[in-house]
Amino acid sequence: MNVMLVQTWMYLAVPMVMYACERLTRALRSSVRPVKILKVAVYPGNVLSLHLSKPQGFRYKSGQYIFVNCAAVSPFQWHPFSITSAPQDDYVSVHIRTLGDWTRELKNVFSKVCRPPTEGKSGLLRAEYDRDGAMSNPSFPKVLIDGPYGAPAQDYKQYDIVLLVGLGIGATPMISIIKDIINNMKRFEGDVESGNPGDASTSASSFRTRRAYFYWVTREQGSFEWFRGVMDEIAESDKKSVIELHNYCTSVYEDGDARSALIAMLQSLNHAKNGVDIVSGTRVKTHFARPNWRNVYKRIALNHREQRVGVFYCGAPVLTKELRDLAQDFSRKTNTKFEFHKENF
Image (cartoon, rainbow, N blue to C red; front, top):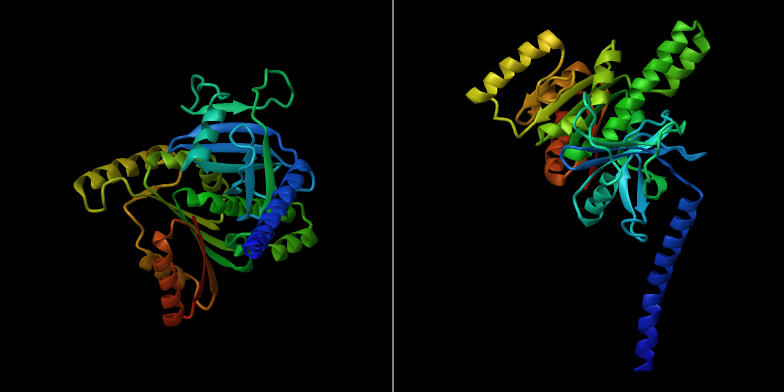
């Protein structure tokens, strides 16, 4: 009996020690990375956006993620979230969808310090830290971060051409990527305009991606509010059409439905007149129903013959098999090679 008890403890001791070491390491790493909450927003679709101060020496790549801890919710729980800011930004941001008890309570905690929308502003709960101290700052809960950690999407820089697919909140790592592409384009154009060919050639050689196709598929119309600013910035600044944006709202009537046709007509008229899409509220026109993924692959294969295309998908597993099978199919049947990468949650 005693022998069995000793053996049982031996089997339990190793994983318990490993778990304790992992928790201690994470706590120590977080303690040397103090972060300050700079901005909070609660978006439609139960999404909480946190803008955090960037710790000294904190470097990351687009597509990576961090673990977040909030003692006001639970002092021992850490949860992973994709980084939505770009590496060049002076802050770190995450967008968190409330899908469980911890995220729901986190949203409730931060909602309490948010102000109601002011007149003329969008109907979002917001709170912002005033760096100058001119206004009273809200009492934000303490947040710790651990990371960054690697993810499949960070390898997008290995490809000249990328197809980025985000399903719902799975758009988060892709947003960081397209922001990174835009920032690198601006840096390259700035080097060219300054008349410094050396800096321009360095910028061009260090950043490989020359064309990006981004497909965001979501059920809820309000989801487009999450990244409206990014969408509008790309539509404004991407003069060379490096990034092709496609928003799909699957909760609207299917293509071919008479009501869908009416919405599409009103949508086209408003976009032509005001440059704003009536569905998403951005400058990017929204499509209805689901993308025809075979046609998406076919068009990219025709546009980029004899090239490697990195396909990056983030979202629920429901799309994984279809996108992977199409990547393999078109790689066999055409001279364009599609390499598939996925991140499921």
